[in-house]
Image (cartoon, rainbow over all chains, first blue to last red):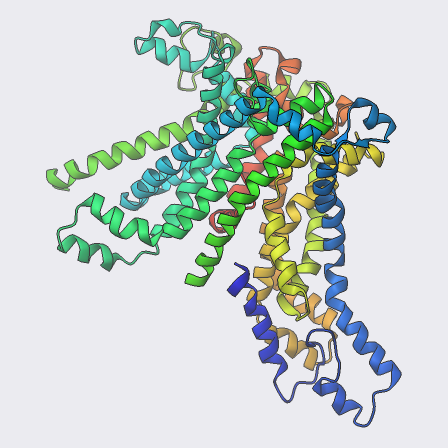
Length: 350
Length: 278
């Protein structure tokens, strides 16, 4: 987005600034008013000290306008990120949290965490969780978007309404709903399964089993994420000209061919963008997991972020948690690089 | 419709029905349970249609300890964070959309990156910083975090809205003798109102739903908690009273649903900026 997106503003600035009869000396080039046209007109020989001062103040205006943002980001974004790295290089536990004076230990924490087989279980689980979720989200969202394209107005509004309703459900409300639906005695899911003939699900406690809890959370995340992806993909598909499909159909292309030769290539960039976003969102999912299982039972739902939180709050190993968080940030950065490359391509196409 | 068309359309209609049911059922089930008498909730065979309705569960939910306190905390933190990021974001968005200065490109790129900041990975350092600066267990700290979470998105969207207002309008006002600030306040600002509204509503949803930081930063005094944290620990409050839990969840969802209805068409365009995850 930065490439063309923010050029528009500057171009307009430059274009309007070039007008000869422009009286308001508002806009300046970079660095403020070092001898721009209106000033030279008002002070033909040499610029007086007050004029120079106003020019200087004018030049400082944009910097003053962004100053609060920059200060906020330095304190609340950059500082925590750096502090995270610093903590991960220190001996930082309960004592250091209370009394301060943490000693640097180099890469000891990283060595400790990378030697821990539990950590590698968590990493594998995190990738499994992300791959399962993102694959399901993208496949289902694509199917739903294709369906939306083929529905009449009434049916489409109905499905859209349901999608938006799901979208609007707060994460924590969704977790309580799922805990209620999968409740062992009175839950509607067990009732349906027993009714369908799976009598072993009578009073089955889903949240006592690690695998079951893991998959319930996957279903929950997918259910909440499909609307955004489906509606965005649908919006992208509505921009594909009808003629393309008609021409291909006349040439005898079937639905699958239409999808692979027209729909997919035409929506490739937006598809890539959404996939990146979903990877990032799923990878750092926390609220759903913490509210439902706190990473249990038996660590079956502990993904990286939950792991970092657990070792910080339960074992007071802030240093190890810092190392785990830093590793998470590095992995997410890699996805982000891909995301921004897609973003640039998307903007270039517009 | 002739039988052939009907036959061809049937699979799509069935698929649409299936998607509708899967998507809408959980929310429907929440609302239905919230209004269902306890006897029916506890019956071995659930009823899927409303037969007898009761407000008992809503009474239990509203009567829960400190219920209004949690609403007050959530509203206070959310609204102040949104106002803060709206005010500060507007200044930055104006500088980015309307002024030419060295470092503008770099600034905007940083805003885009900050929009994707891995907030969940920063729980521990923010907790440590809050402790160091004596801000732990205090709502202002939560407000500051939510302000920073919503700020990048606010700047990006407001920049778009400001760029959409033709600069000629401002210039005309300035030709007529208005200062730049006056021109902005009297000409641009009224045109920005819809943009400001939708931006702040998106920010509201993000902050309203936030769980991880509220859970981490407010520990000592339970009455200082926000709604999501309180609701996540519903077992402590309602035990196995599912009716009350669903009533509380419905009430918690209500403001967000209202915002979605207000925004309607703008929802898709705004959310595709990727800032708000429902």
